[in-house]
Image (cartoon, rainbow, N blue to C red; front, side, top):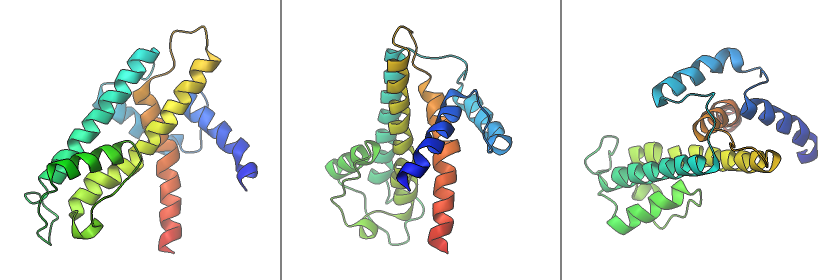
Length: 182
């Protein structure tokens, strides 16, 4: 099955990440994609050099760590905490935020007995989703860097992040969710 799906998946990812080819999801997702670029104030036509790409990725990661750390430290004050769970300790919140941002998902806490619903949904599950997209975007940038060895640009991190989430992960996760529900 892996070998069977490798070529079509690669061709689909090439169309998605290059933005030149059309996909069957374009009629539904292009307006959402454009809206995200508008909200992020990103010009999808402007590519980045490797340094700009790396800084964008690191800034996104830092924002994710700070966001999740804040949610975990303040979960006792935030909604969706019917059990009245207290805040994570500072070192546990930092460790958890970094581990989920880097997609290692190392957990040294008791899951539902420690993290509120909001902490799990907005903090941790968010990273389960976007950290995969960051990894795929970095892989795409690496391939572009090798393929464009004399070029000065390797794509746009924000465009890659949006496209991987919208055109690959969201449909894949929706299909998987229907499978799990069935």
